[in-house]
Length: 247
Image (cartoon, rainbow, N blue to C red; front, side, top):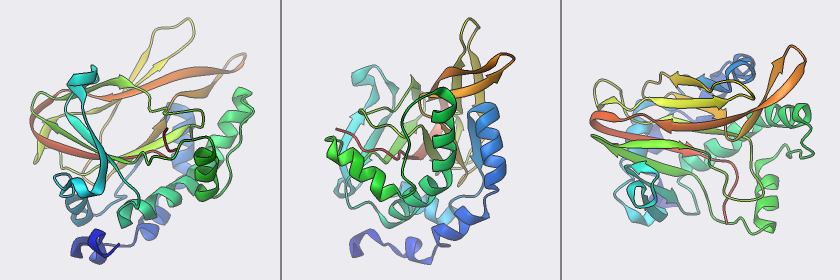
């Protein structure tokens, strides 16, 4: 993987130390309360710029999607190929290990008879055995006027219920607009929207599909979708870390 290790990656703070510095107890509380949680300073500015700079080089990617062709919005994204670039290959299992407890508790609360192994490689083996063998981490690029419609990243039978998006660009300097948005569809109630403020290097962990909410008569499921509002100017790059692979 020597070609995937530019100097900015080698010199950056190891991913594990930044993951360890996150207040994970607060992340768990925020995920339970809102369906999302901010992970401040997950990636250094140098590493953000190095990851964003990969976008023009198709050697790192397995496919490119132009959103307007599919009715997904405007803008584009590329799925990484295996082997993943080193920073992503490090972050993916480390973040999974921090989130798997929440994922298992959510499923138990919702009566979903699926549990996830503690080790991310073991979960990927489950995906691959079901034919979900293609990597799902992706790099998104938005320019002025671009946006991402509300959606869910499911990709197959095996779905990890939480994913992470990391903002690689700096709001107010690299772009204006382009806010990360979540909606929550509640039974017999109007939908609730959540706008998540992020700075360069911050990440948001959020529910992929459904999550439990505690009500006055016990817990119930709500359906979650996410997207990005219209970019008013500049260019915005985001790294998406999805823990299940696709068919």
